[in-house]
Length: 224
Image (tube, rainbow, N blue to C red; front, side, top):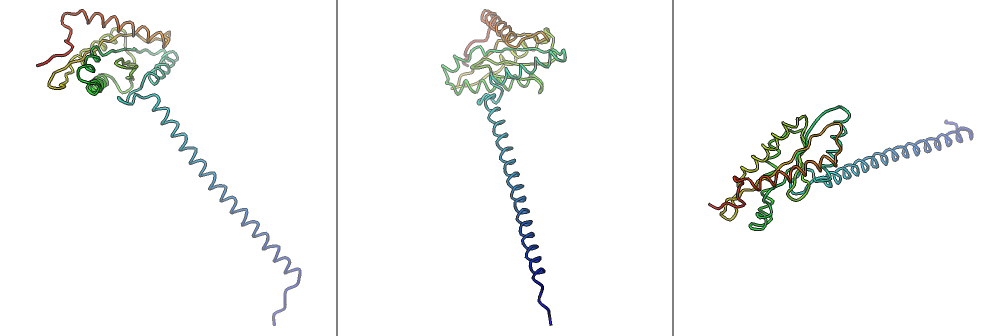
């Protein structure tokens, strides 16, 4: 015949039961805390990715998919800091499309957008993946090219002009050409970003005036 447990034994069993319940309760709390931490980390990572996407969007030209003025100036600042630190070299080329406005006026902005996209494709095909092509605004672009002497940079600017001059488009049965003028500023450890942009921009406007007076300048619109 089984003997009943003593009161002390029963109390001990009850105590153990309470301890187990407290322990299991704490374990569940720890599990819940870990789940909450994982969830918060996931939400934080998602928020950071969204911030990066918004920053990239703010630095990118929505039409052409290249850095806008803000994005390009940031890249230029970083590049000049690198040049100063490591005594590297580079060149800044500012390029302006010569006759985009007449194309927009005659054939519409959709035609002008097509011209801009073709120009960006032609320009990016002339540079390396490490170089930067950006849109400063409207019909003005800028290129940041590494490890070029001033002579090589001017030769590259001439090659870019030629590549764009050779582009042709057909709108409403008319064969159209655009053209571009390019100005160069070299980048050295002594260069300041704003000053380099001013120099390249001034050189571009000088080149535009020269091209305007060249006897073999490409006509605004050629119809065949």
